[in-house]
Image (spheres, rainbow, N blue to C red):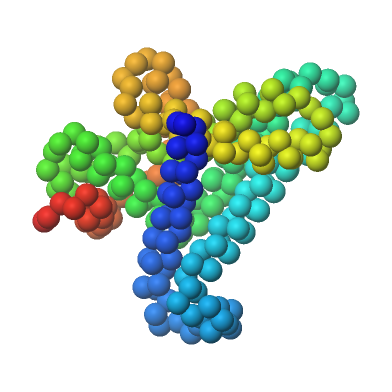
Length: 249
């Protein structure tokens, strides 16, 4: 099924992303002393240490995401019910607006950090390089630099659309007790993420006016999650894409 396919692809992408970040971080940690936790993990699990760390990171990230983007918006939206709002659709819309607000605030705040700002520059370089490749141009710094840093299949678009799709899907679950709402939201995560994944794939292929309208908010949001890259960052992005696609220099 397409939705299941989308959820599986998302999980695989997350695992690859975490492995890649760990690999990148290892180059900066060579001169640093290992923490007691790192030593304990390596001693306890030996060859499986990296997999254990990835599992821990994914578990902690999942719990934090559930707390910040599911539990907190649901709890705050429930306060509006006490003010006399009874419509489950309206309450779900309020919850969705709160979730989007938390997400935007989170992105804006972390974007002020120097390391994250640099990460966003590499993000922009990635988008430019992909655009250049998709337009069948030679992957040179000059060619890549002229393209937009805003891409319709970006993860930022995905996260924003997840919040919009969740409003629609969660509206069919009613507005019961807090524990029931939390249960429904967690159970429906594969449905929401899988549906959004299929929408993102469609946005990347479609040239229709409707697709442009749907993609517009996510593209605007990339002003927060991307920065204009420098020459070195573009070179890194080109090298990475060539490696991923098996293109020889």
